[in-house]
Image (cartoon, rainbow, N blue to C red):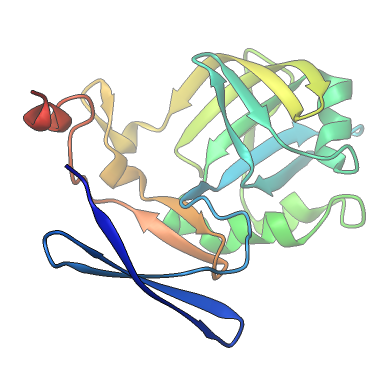
Length: 212
């Protein structure tokens, strides 16, 4: 039986402090904080497209995820140059940013192609045209999803993943070794980037230890 007892609520500097105690005599203290985009970790996605003149554009996006096994959704407003490019080219790529390129990844988020059209050139990174879609693959980022544009709706851009490429340097046999990828995650609370490397469990397996 799960029993939780409320002991006391304090108000200090506009933050309510709530102290709980359970039947095991464990003390839990929690604070109510200002609501933000507070799911952690958030991804650091590099969305790459071609501009009208064929030059490469890349933006940093945290609000994106899988919609289905072979579909991605990116919560992007239509004011982004990337969205304009996607609608015109009907394609884009999504790369996973890594710790080796934190500076470049962040640069793609703080500078807009609407007023800095040569921002990819400024980054010093390189790109190769996808063989499957009309979009560039950023060579330095180890994992890349090549996507065909499906539609732009209330939640943003939806695309179909038609191919995924991985740099062989982060592979272990036929599988991706995430510890080699050194992917980074975005911390929305303090605006930090964190490296994701250590495996701490096995999905769909460890939880079976508690199964009755």
